[in-house]
Image 1 (cartoon, rainbow, N blue to C red):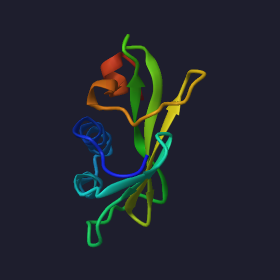
Image 2 (tube, rainbow, N blue to C red):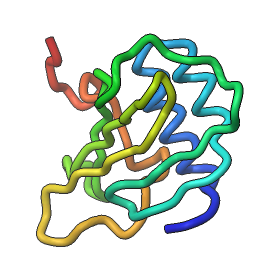
Image 3 (tube, rainbow, N blue to C red):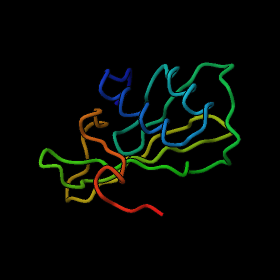
Image 4 (tube, rainbow, N blue to C red):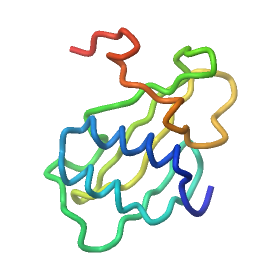
Amino acid sequence: MNGRLDRGQRDALALLASIQNDAAVSAQMLTIESVQGSPTTAKLTCPNGVPVSAFPDGPAPGKLAVVDDAGELAGELVLWLSGGEIDLVEQTWYSEHPPTALPGRGSVARYRDLGFDMR
């Protein structure tokens, strides 16, 4: 997976950024220029000069559920940061076969929207 994100993938990642409740992370996600790597560990590249988040290095606190065509939980998306900037998105999976692409907006959901209590 090398190149650009399609509109559905951008919308899914924008939702992932928005649940972090951090203006810098949301602003950075809007500027993603390219994606490198695999659908399970995709390196996201922002331009220089983006706003910097106060989040520490590592996974951001909010995660999105990835659902299959039947609406069943199939994995999750985890956003990782380094130096206050988006570094990569990790996609986990709960089946025998790893995902072949980053999900589009129609394949991700907030856990609370699926009825999970995330206290």
